[in-house]
Image (cartoon, rainbow, N blue to C red):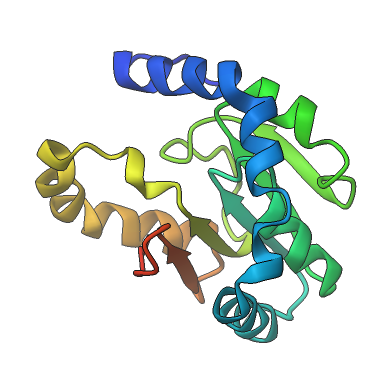
Length: 165
């Protein structure tokens, strides 16, 4: 994992390491009762059915990536928490795993077909949102470089709204 330099990132990782088992228990089957989310993910799967990897950014227990893997997509699960990967192993059998920060993806140019970020952008502090908006040009360049110039992103927050990368 890349060196963590931001105290908030370290605190987030440690927090998820501590609650990983409970988090898995709570969210492992969450999509069972969410037909809208399943339909949304079905659309993501249809839109990303190309030869390549889809990255599940901030994957947590892996329920989103597991759903998409069951639809035939090749998934790379990315999360800060190593403990989350340990408890999520049953769900992540069909995906590659990378412990790391979604803001510092180590992928080569043109190596990723797309990405999804369900529930993970909530860790950006409200005071940092202006910086995030200002960095959109940088993000667009990163995604153009890494995501083969045909990047599609999708995201959700727990309240039912959209997040975008």
